[in-house]
Image (cartoon, rainbow, N blue to C red; front, side, top):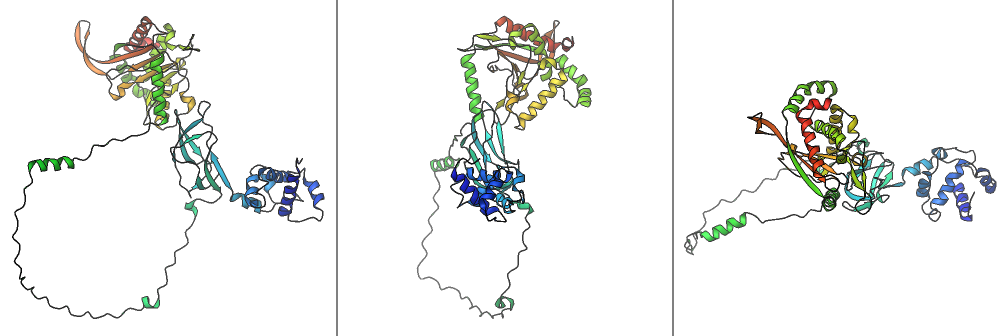
Length: 476
């Protein structure tokens, strides 16, 4: 069982220290207990720190105790080797190191943005103690065990890798709020302070006599110098303050966004086609059913679900819009899909993220709206996961919520197209030979010309326009 003589010596030394009864024949005791669970604790200790056992017995025992079952640490776990309560007590004062957790298969490092606790603070198990920023999401680091923060092993804004030591905590302790402060005793007053001092009569102040006139004549007052116009303008200019500039390092998400967008422009043969859509009917449709849908499902009916549904239906006739180019050397294979996963662009404080609503082809408008709302909330609350943003076959970006009149969105590779929605503006349009004021929206479809021809892109956008202008077509 024991591979070296050193292990046997350490195990024997441990038995001498932890046995409450020392048998006369230590060898017989050693033989009897070596196959019992209690000896596993000693073996773990010998493997953990054989060189530091004489100097750091308590800490070594505590460290090794985390490697064996809890029942081994109970007093009288074995009739011959009765581990005293000291084993559990010593574990309380051990140190535990919290490491960078696994984040995702594609993420191996990040930037430590901030510690949410300070040295000396008590942390409960699973309580958040730090935040790591990656190029996709923010990862929370939680305490694996309860204890008091003893040392930060890295600094904020440092680059950290998976498995790296972050924080050292001392196990045990209790929250500061639970500790009752001892009543402060007021310092006893000395006899000199307790006895009132007799009042001392102050000496009468001498009467002030008028000062004698100075023998020296006063110097004549010089007239105040008036400030010239040039001096006044110079002083007013200096009072305006210095012109300053700030340099702020880009966070990982912004760097990743910049890299991806530039990669898209350098890789795809991007081209944008435009159209405009009359929003009158879809707005009337929303007005009619908005309250009923809200009461029955709790979902606020918007326009994103209508455009998502319209895109899914248009893709049935033009599947290349939902395809992508993959393969080596820039791609030599077209991948067609019978499912539609729509990436919805959401603006957050740290940058643009695109969570994915999956299997949109199998959803109705209410289900789509509900999924989009859930993803948007997770994005704003900074709770998106890698899985929430992985994949996506088509992107919809709604710049209209910020007032954008028209724009050209950038393709989210490896997707082949992105639809840009814009603000609804009332404009005069010709309807059946008459000029009417209608709520109009510009649509922009940026597509990869390597995969989509102009004819297909234009036809797709026209079909989306037709579905939105007559929502009844989406029910057929």
